[in-house]
Image 1 (cartoon, rainbow, N blue to C red):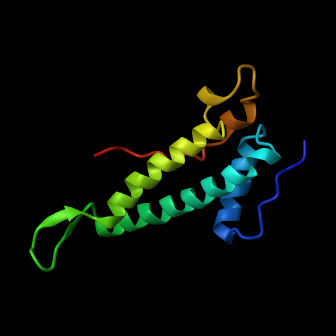
Image 2: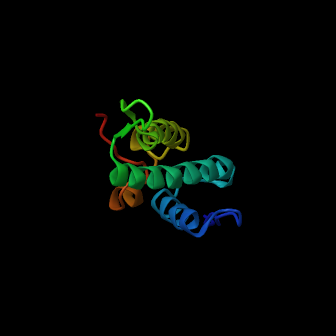
Image 3: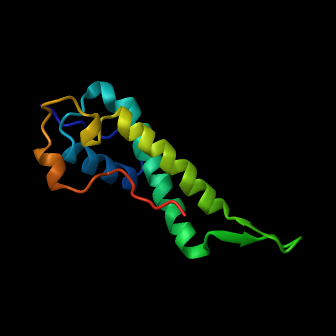
Length: 120
């Protein structure tokens, strides 16, 4: 089976994610490329938002009113997490969403590309 080549429009970090995902999930085919591009881009945005959340915290304070609210980074992490999980299911990146009898030996040997998060 031919290896899927990352599209040129992806950034260097997104191409690295692409290679990691494609290497861990040999069931991906040429028809999965459009969804995979979106998945990789969302996953990269999730990584950036998670880092910003770690740096800035879950709550932000309004300069005008002094009230605390959910930080934009926390909102982004929640939204991106839901989107990446939905796409991961569509791409059959979870063992539960693969057809019966699909090879899982490669996927089991490498960590999943699906982000893991805890709801607070």
